[in-house]
Image (cartoon, rainbow, N blue to C red; front, side, top):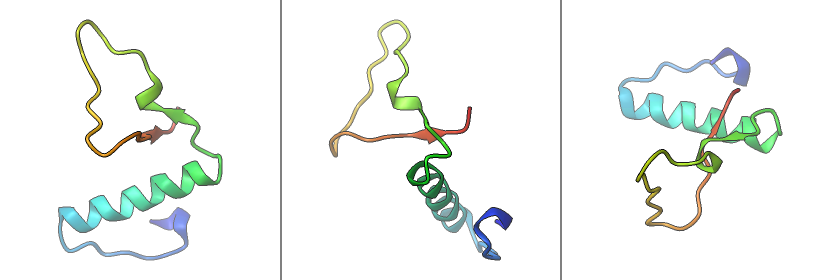
Length: 61
C-alpha cells in the first residue's frame, strides 16, 4: 500500500482485509474520505443491521 508509506505483503485475504480497513479508517480520520455508505438511503425494504451500535463505512467518491 504505497499511500500508507508501508510495504505490505498480506499472506491471506484476512490480512488484506485488515490492511485495507486500516487504510479506509485513516482516510476518514484525515478527512479525505467523507462519503459514508451507511448514510445513503436504503432501497425498497432494505434495512441496515447494526449489532454493535452505530458504524460508518467510508468510501471514496
